[in-house]
Image (cartoon, rainbow, N blue to C red; front, side, top):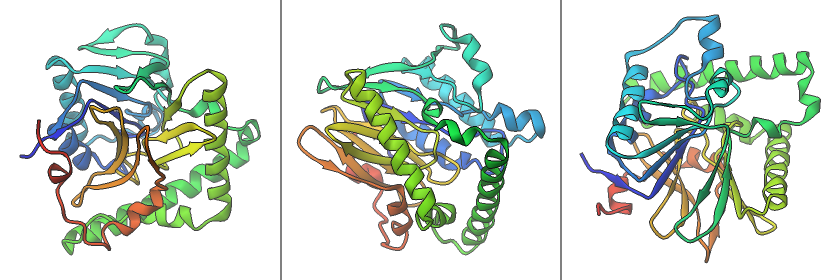
Length: 285
């Protein structure tokens, strides 16, 4: 099994405990991962969903076991709870099995750039707090994920690569894209005011690498729709990668160059027949 070497890795919005979680892809990524630091940027275990419906797959247990094994092997693992696992925020400052729980973190890249790391739900606009809007948004998202799950099952039987149907839908809805752009701007503005070079978050299930007025907005996406992670190489460059049957780089930000990457781009990856393994892109050290 080829390994994937990097300095730091960031994943969020795994939603273990829900049928939509793509745990098998994440498990493959974690088993190949060789890094110094791993940040779990919220909504790793969906405690809200588990409170409503008890559902758990063996792969979900395997994901947690792999994270604990990484910590045991000396990887610095930081768990930053999100809004779906907010109950864990009360444990901030404690460590379990080598996994440190924190409300947020400051990550210093290999190139000296400083990033604030948080789940990102604190940047939700106040007007989305209306109960009927929240309910409608959640219902539409559940329906999109249900359709995505059905399409994925059919494509698996046909031995076709993963196709993120829900992301394709999202990228074609003007209001959804306007929300995503406004959210990114709020995150970048807060990072600038805080004196950071960028902000790393998740929450909105739309992975992206963007420079907004000189500040990096880095969203690591999710493992429900995108199957993406943000990784830092040993030069300090940040890269968003999609990981399924066809691992694909989606965007990159170094001091010299920023290649922006809307997550919708990964919808084209299977169609482009990019069958190179990431071991070709990141030679083992």
